[in-house]
Amino acid sequence: QMQLQESGPGLVKPSETLSLTCNVSGGSISSSSFYWGWFRQPPGKGLEWIGTIFYTGKTFYSPSLKSRVTKSVDTPKNQFSLRLSSVTAADTAVYYCARLLSGFDAFDLWGQGTMVTVSS
Amino acid sequence: SFDLTQPPSVSVSPGQTASITCSGDNLGDSFLSWYQHKPGQSPVLVIYQDNRRPSGIPERFAGSNSGKAATLTIRGTQAMDEADYYCQAWDSSTDVVFGGGTKLTVL
Image 1 (cartoon, each protein chain N blue to C red):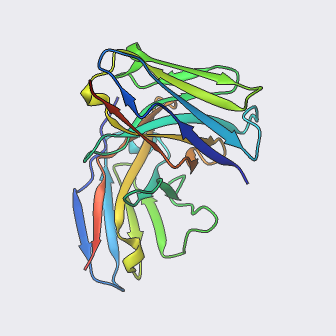
Image 2 (spheres, helix red, strand yellow):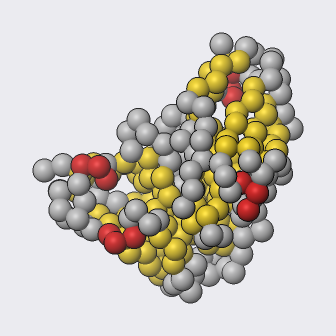
């Protein structure tokens, strides 16, 4: 059974770049049935979409974050990554990766989430 | 992009029916999904393509979409259903849009 696991630094300084990785186990990231997404939830706020990527590298980004976000896929390692540049305290959040099942048009599998705090 | 509007909170007594609405101008152009999110846990997909339930989701969860408003209905609400619920739609077929979330309280 496929599982997703986020990993990241936990603490990032303001103005630096946040890097997160989502490891996919129990299945192939290269399946044409799946897209892969990143989301976040700031403390006390709702869910926010960051972006979606296909294993070919095709990406879709939230308009509000597009200028600071880069996503990539590493098919040999079966993982995909997120880089968010020039972070501020407003980027403090729990970050989730998730799987989009194309036949569902919905994100049917989520990682457990990783908390990232932006602070000096 | 467009906005999805949800009530901030809904309360229901155990065993009763809870209804959570999601409104937006473009709902007719997009499939709608609903996610259940409990504190400290990952979101769980409970409804996709407006009214379909993933495997393992109880039958008491149901969804509908009239094009202007969507509703998540939970019949026979249980204490375990207490959570935040988010509706999610698609903008231009590729961009994900969430509603602001509704806190369901089972009193």
